[in-house]
Amino acid sequence: MKESAPGAEDYDGIRVCDHPVPPWWKWLFVITIGYGMAFLLWHFITGGSTARDAYEAALAAQAEQRTAAYGELAADEATILGHIDDEAAMAGMAGLFKSKCAQCHRVDGGGSIGPNLTDDAWIRVTHVTDIARIIGEGVAVKGMPGWEGMLTPTQIVLLSSYVARLQRHPAFDGKKAEGEVVAPWPRAAPASPPEETPGP
Image (spheres, helix red, strand yellow):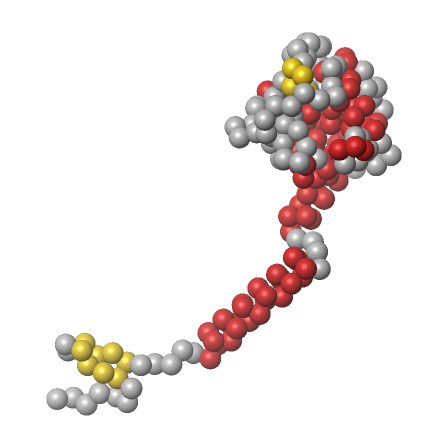
């Protein structure tokens, strides 16, 4: 019978060798665990930013760049409703909403700390222009900050359009409706998108 190498055993004719784990594998395992612990301490204790934070900041910067082409928009009914179907503007506002509003209203607008924005009930809104007013002034008693001064007037108008548009896609598991039911927003003529400026 052939002798087995040191550390090897035979089981029903199958030779099982007991080879040690390579050192590089052990160090890789240790480094992975160490990196994970360091990340947990950095992110959850010191509040360090993550790739998601950078992504959301990039979305907000993109929204600011897009809205700059619109000039200064008035916060009236025709302007707010006229931009609801402006897909380029709404794509930019989706990023702005995610970075500024989703913490309280969720990304889909279904409501968390703040109310559900996807149903037809509103707490302080009876007219679509009230959305722009609330975004600008905030609701101090509810802890909602006023964004006037931090967002441009045009951003507030287009963000109002985005919030008004959220009713088209009610959140599946949204927060229970609060406030009074408001009639559907009236139709408005689509606003003309800004002209594309030629690149350098």
